[in-house]
Image 1 (tube, rainbow, N blue to C red):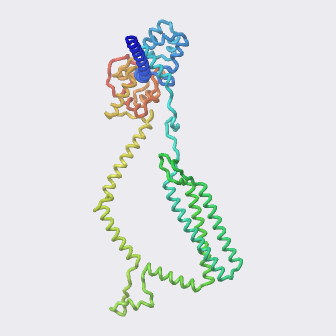
Image 2: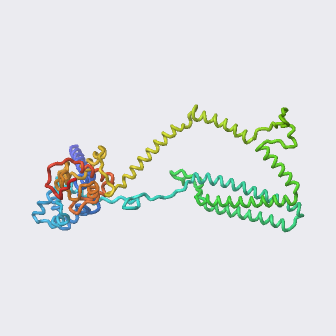
Image 3: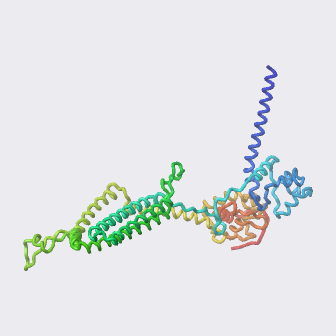
Length: 474
């Protein structure tokens, strides 16, 4: 029993050691990114050279040169290693930049974690295309409005069916007239047959072309987009419009031919039809009594031989009057009683709120277009607070928290190397300089660069590093 207990205890110890080792590895991998951002991000960029050289593969380079252990000494105390002259890698890095590397208070394990993170880092996949002066904009893909197109397709299809029915009805009437009145003359029936054949061929071609261009959705094909069962492209809609126009032309032409043939064969029928139509139009527009029947509406009073007719009001005017009454009732209930719709002042206020939101979005979008030629000095508290946070995250390692300078120059005195105007400071922060100032265009957006530049110009004067550059007075 004692041996078994000892075995179990040893197994537990081994398992504990393995867990500690695995946990240490995970912590090491997770801490690498945070350590890089807090200690190296100011001078080193991921995947490329900056103020400092690209760190990817740097550990392997030192090991290949036989100076793997000296790499830790270089990070912790670079000036001492350079002064000793024992490291060729340190001397080579010294020649890379005139700016001295800042000693870092880190352990060997933290250095390994940083370099492991840098070696495993990969750039994100490109999701935008370059436009203009390096700005990015997403690729635009045009997608038809399939729901609207399907509704239009239904409407055009119904309209085409109605026109085709009208064409065949007129064709049948023409055929009947030819058979009855022209005694089945060959030429007349041939004309009708030719029209019917043309219409039939045209309908078949239109249906086949349209059907071949459409896409039918099977169950499960639509995915999350909730597409309709039939995908109608814009080109299909244009084709259907052309088909309807062509069918309408055929229908009007056949109607004209039918009326001309009817006038030739049955002129009295045409006259009667014209009279009936005239009476119908007169009834709808004026409701006037014919002259021969005016005695039925004569009023009884007479003045100087003039008698008055008691005509009805024109129907179009009367129905328009009734419409205004109905419209007034609907208007009162809609705007004043039920308040379904907004009155003018309420609609105006909503439109103004919507416009304010759109203006704010536009101004925010346009703010990203600022550059060294259009930058302006920001003085609002929120902008300066944002600039201070950016300064503390990116600039204090070289310029200190109060801007008095250490590796970099004093930012609070009147001496400036590249100019003190907001446009000059914006350009310096954005592009960096040849004397060791890193570029921040890849880290900050234009608004952030403008905010931190404005914050730098708002710093009060503080004693610090000796003056560098020339004094500039307003």
